[in-house]
Length: 140
Image (cartoon, rainbow, N blue to C red; front, top):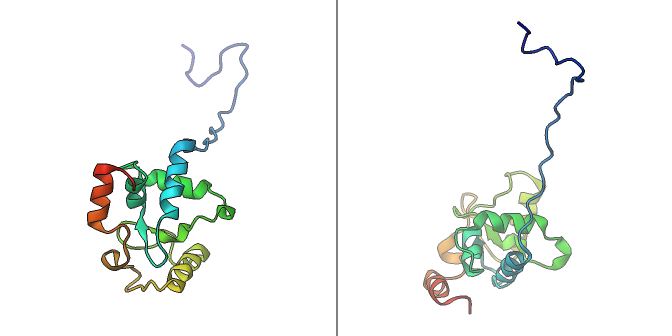
């Protein structure tokens, strides 16, 4: 009886290498809608990833918003720093250069942090009632 670990006659032993992960690209149409929604966030306001997805007409696609932001070059003039997570926090690790840069941008626009959080009731965009209208009737 042959051992399972022995190679068959005439076959070379091959080493399995891990497959490279391919980048997931957002569909161009969806990416354009997300970028347009982010550009609509007014100065001095913030929006959650899920809120951006809702305004873009892509409900429940918050992760796609993050993907689009990662893939968008800084030269496009997108106010990426106005997008925060649903708990009112910056998503970058505290203490990282990216965290400091985003917080500085937001503070320069007059947004206050209390305990590392932004008040979504005070600075959140769009206002809750407007977001519901947009969900029902589409972006303005």
